[in-house]
Image (cartoon, rainbow, N blue to C red; front, side, top):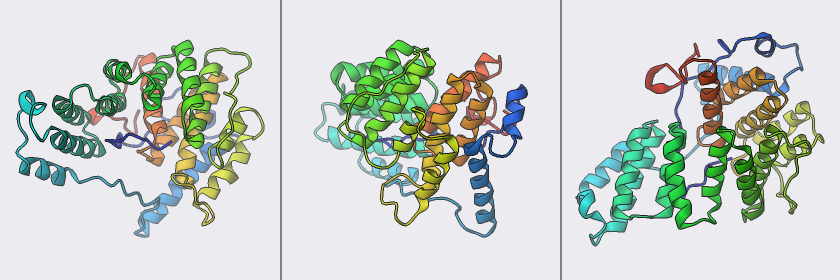
Length: 342
């Protein structure tokens, strides 16, 4: 699901992750599976090959994404030209709202470059201009989550929730934190609220997916969705898959339809659908106890590089957790990012 943050489009820039080092027979089977055994994994590898060929032909090999943000140089120049006051005096200045927006522009640009500590610092400067602004707090919490500072993200998100406890986006992030930390009862409660409360029925579908998976991972024998009218189009096939009404192989046709000229649903290209499907189906493998297969699905998701989707950050958090559980550094390569050897 594309991130929906009013002041920030947060991303995490990483290097490709491979299956190497995952570790047992199940992982090896998934790395070189019999044809048709892991359809989404096969499709992801096909897409990777397609992008490689497109790159050799001088083409982008993926959807053209316009983030709508200034480059870091542009954002810094605009802020410098504004002569922003010191943080200690910004809140009382006449231009406090404008200065906060300038800090947010810089923070957004830094996140697009993968500089999460820098982005967090600029969000904090924005908060100095607009203290206790729930939207800025939510944006800061989101970038801390992507930086894998889960404790920091939770503290800031709790502050945002104390201001606006009904915020769907802040409750969604709280649920994501609970999910990654395996606090299943809390995650179930959060996602039930998100699934029931999101005004956008399509976006509510992603709350339904996380609600179902939190129940599955938490050991609930018969997971249930919140009863409400479903949204149209994607991601409904994923919900049907969870209920056993779609097979993994049948998802492929719906995923491939993303690049069809007939697809008018925003943010649902083939790569974007594949990114989401790899995460949710990967989590279903985890719920079945096939953890190493799940990790390969997450790694394939990361390699698609749909950086602006929540599932991307969630997959990174899950991979990091699995690394730690195996007694390995979360991501030992440069800037804390996974490398080919991880």
